[in-house]
Image (cartoon, rainbow, N blue to C red; front, side):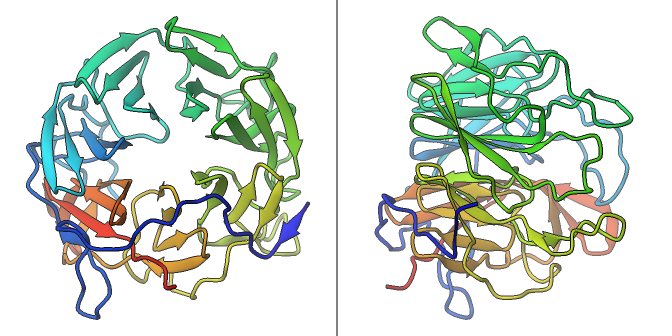
Length: 399
């Protein structure tokens, strides 16, 4: 494996620092803090889909049913909502959008954005939303029996399998034949198989789009996983030629935390694992790292301060932009390698079911939190849905 302590991401554009009307203002200690955003036209709800298209963040669907108490075992969620709104983080303004033709629920990799068009896989239906014309369209679904996550390779949507395991098998067994990942042709409204990747049967498959294709991160599917560290293998796809290039593997656990930040792939997930008592690997292996797909170079992330896992606010999900990734309690400015702690929300209640999104603006990277439910700490019998939103502008790195 090629190794380096830290490689700055070349080619990332430096954003101008500053505070607009909706930027996070100073907190009590002088650091930027969360600020409430303008009242939205949406009703209170949990777990809406949030996705950035152009300069606006779309908030769509979610559930307005009574929320499930934290740590409770509740019935299956009801059918999600279809309405939505677009938030402009620079103007602090909301605009209602047309209702989706399908119920929409937040989920990992259920949406992909190409230009101003959002593609959404909802159950067995595949739809698109054109943010420029405020119009939805029904499209041909990929046709797979199971749900497939979406990504964007170049300027095309790809639906891929996150595992090659046979569902329900007692021991890991690969599907035979291995199913194809699929690429969408928007002009023809049709899907076609991608060339088979060179990594073979794998699980924890994460496909991250690049300008000219995608990078696959995965762990080899073996009969006895865990005996050896399930570190990630990698391969790069050139979509124009349909060719794969095997990249050096990384000494990193799981590709699921990786997001594109500029021209590199970054996971900022905290923590390590050692295999436990049964299959101890003899060392701690982390979940965080950086891969430059152009060179195949892996880098460790710069050190961050130690913290108690229960200390402070953590973002519900990872979000990223042109130069920033926000994961858990931390935001990382990738070109400079500088960390910023995510500030605490100025609320006393326990919040859950919020959705997060990231937008690059002239004033810096903005994180939006919206919706969810609030519960009195320790009192899980009287939760209420929220239609509140909060924004935080990630501080510019010191120069």
